[in-house]
Length: 289
Image (cartoon, rainbow, N blue to C red; front, top):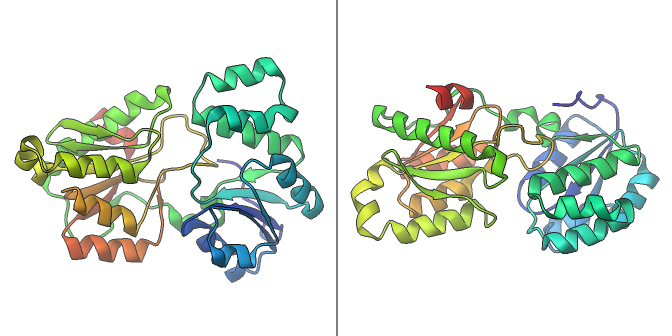
């Protein structure tokens, strides 16, 4: 984790979709931190676009650099959901800032390396990139239960299996979540994201296998080992609970200190209402136990 932004330094938010940019704006307003908002067209919602100091396209990297040069923020934070373009298009937008050999290497690797390249480009222009959790630390949760539904003893083995699998898969730069039924990994999040993975699980849950195992279906979410923590930390929120419940999931386990819990109170209320347990675990401890 980088050093925290100074209490008085201005912050620029590059905002995509979802609740996270709103949460960061509220935190900055609450602490009276000066800030600028650069909204991504097609991703940031109407409310964010109305509040934005500027609106740009996702691949308008030169435009983003230009606005940051005007504003000279003390720190930059990337927040909110985007649907990533084809890697070739993304790298084409970076072509002005990288040589062809470096671009070919990036194209052959995964999303984490692309995001590191974006961070590096922003930093090369004199701006410090920080994580959303450095603006709103309460997005990260400590070890322990979050809701009223207790973690059943029978869930601990599947949770361990999930964290071990995520740890083992970290070098392959795939998703940050999976579903475990019993001690069998039933679905692994790919480039499609958590929502679509849960939709796949919902389809499976109508079949014989998951009908037998659905009382042990658990969603496990955590950051990859060695992941760049300033961008793309895994996130869960109220919608995650709704989609998980529809897929026959009985509990959600997140990596303590490694997963953004967005709209926490709403998420807990949704989980309690649907009878899902919601808890944070130490990923290393669970993976090694």
